[in-house]
Image (cartoon, rainbow, N blue to C red; front, side, top):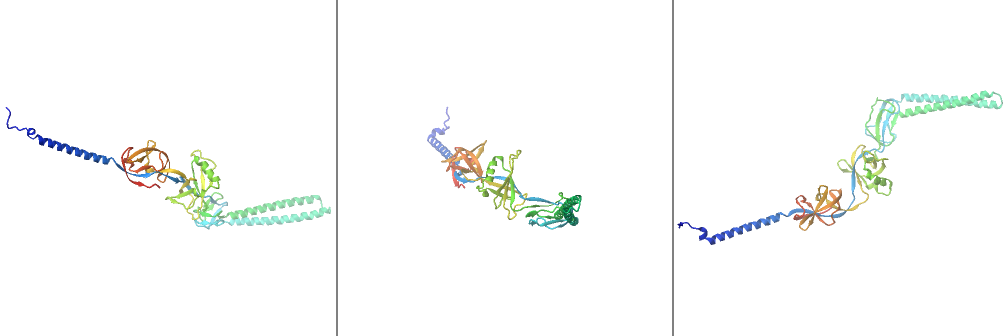
Length: 383
């Protein structure tokens, strides 16, 4: 027997139940639609783009370089003695012929005087023998003396001449030694630190007194690779090439040197160990900004400009040796492989894969994949 007190809610209120279910399903559909819209909005990645443009570019290569003196001499004495005077200050700029050091001249003055006396004696002896010969020759013409006497006088005259020549040579050597006791500047330049002091005993050809180098012009050495040998040979030989603007120097601190250089000389051979060859440039140095031994960076510009396609290096991605960029096509990013060339100032030359005027992604590229929806916020201007 059924219990009359049990009430079936679904039987009594079927209309209300159906309405509740209908409202529930509407809410679910509305929520799903709202979420779908949010998901669709989140698929657009915000990026910044730029246009690929053709530019006239003059490329360059850089090399480590060292400043060297085109003329530099180690000053050494050619006589023995003690240093008696130092006439220059360390680091002083001197003119050719400036007296720099004096070595004790006492012995050399004595030798000079001794040689002068020997010359005077030899000259007197030569004059005497010469007069004898003249007298004997007149007597011989009168057949008043024997031939042997005249022959002996002629031999004595030749001996007297040789003695005189030897005495004059000794005098010249004495004068040279005396002159070498005074050390003078061989050319205009700057002297370094003195290696001797007053009272120092110097030996011929051994004791270093000082070093002098020419300041202006001055040299710069660098070592390019052997594949560039013919380029530098052409620059060296061709007088019509505007080499003045090709060689630019950067000093420590990335400071640009205000003067440009020219090729002074090329080395005779390529170093087989390094595959490089030495090039020496000549730079004006009127303000003495360059000193021998200074390290610098040499910038070698190409002779002519090239018309190339440039893109920012930040726009280029590399994976397993392949390079690519993302091209903007409507609202999508398309991956395009490229063949890169040289780089210049934060930009990369594109040899293949792009055309002038194409729009590429330059910022936000890390969040983009090929075929992704993108939203370009702004467009950067190419250089």
